[in-house]
Image 1: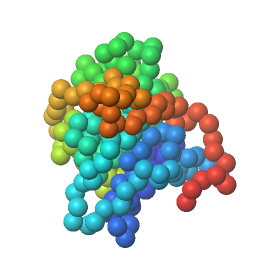
Image 2 (image 1 turned 180 degrees about the horizontal axis):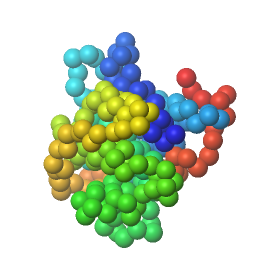
Image 3 (image 1 turned 30 degrees about the horizontal axis):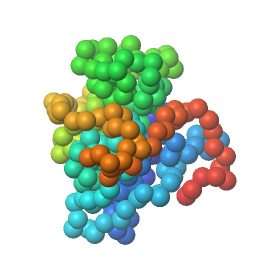
Image 4 (image 1 turned 120 degrees about the vertical axis):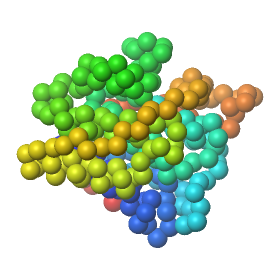
Amino acid sequence: MRLRIAGEVAEALCYLHLSASMPIYHRDIKSTNILLDEKYRAKVADFGTSRSIAIDQTHVTTKVLGTFGYLDPEYFRSGQFTDKSDVYSYGVVLVELLTGEKPISSTRSQEFKGLVAYFINCMEQNQLYDILDAQVLKLGKKEEVMAVANLAKRCLNMNAKKRPTMKEVTMELEGIRSSIKEGHIQLNYQEDEYERTEVLEAWDVDSTSTGTTFDHISLSIDVQPLLTKRISRKNIQL
């Protein structure tokens, strides 16, 4: 079910980026903007910060808007939002689905307050299974879990150019789901080296800051996990 949700969200973002009459960047992908009906079918909602762009554009330069824990570090640093910024936020959602953890948690150490840093560290220390959600541990096969985890890691690369496109993400998830249906799966992924960059994490900035170098930033705090409640179908935005 979690893998299907991930696939449906990826398909929606792929449509916005590539198939809409004009490309659209959502700019606020997070768990609470993914609505689930009674059968846990996913719909992407809340296009209040979305921007359509010309086909020949590669980015939009705007006031930095976003939610703690989901914000692309490159966008945070440069103010330039690209399709790969949506990919980064989507990667955080993938990690939420794998771990059941909140994007920001005060129960973790300061170093790993953010879920991304926590997840990447566990991946690099071969401790992924220490942070997986209990249901994922119980029901997920090692090969499929690792395939999704490595895809999430690629989406979260600090270098946006090394992240996959949403089309590539969609195709990879389709391949994983097809392999599961057929009863086998191969770890056939391209794992780029995770590039670390010294960046100021979004959660280190006071979202109400004024009179500082960060007064162009408007961040919100939203740490509700994806699968905590169901949304009635009549509330889903199509």
